[in-house]
Length: 227
Image 1 (cartoon, rainbow, N blue to C red):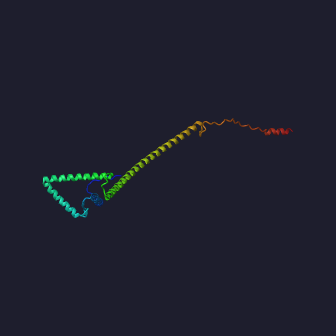
Image 2: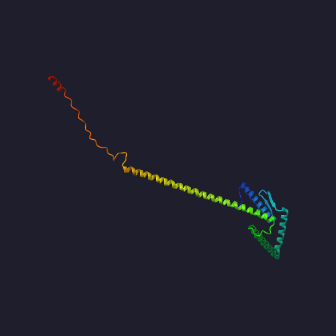
Image 3: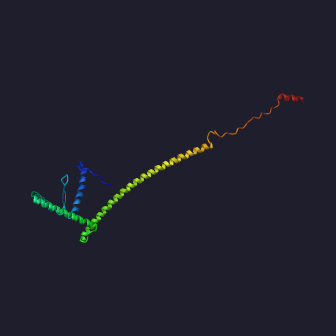
């Protein structure tokens, strides 16, 4: 993910301010050194921290850079006082900018593999190194974008899987409910129930057999006396 913009104002927390100063100071010194090497420029950088600690970089020597700056400032101030000198100064600036533009266009063509016949082995080596650095930066950037896209696709895939799981649960739940309903309907169609409402046992006519009467005791005694 890209870094968000921060508000450009003084950092109140001292520890955070010191960390930010250290990081940005190192980045500024690195850029100054790269500018001096890549463009053959004379660069002088002076930094004083909030604790008055000095940090500096000079492509040649800080003294020569400062002397050149002072000389240029005096000439520039003098030229501004004279209209003719001012005109010459701006003409010189335009010519310098036009030359820089031509140099940049030529360098761009060389990066595209054109107009390489006039370059020395050293120039070709420097151009090769620059292309390798640019290619490495492009690959890192491309890898970052691919990784970011993979994370987004993974999130979408997880969401789809979750939705499919929820749908499958609903389908399984509906199938179970329909199966239970069908079982109840089948039971009613065959008339099975716990109360035996529809099954009637056959009616049996039970009649008690009358016991055979025994002879009366007195009658038996009288019959015996007759003999």
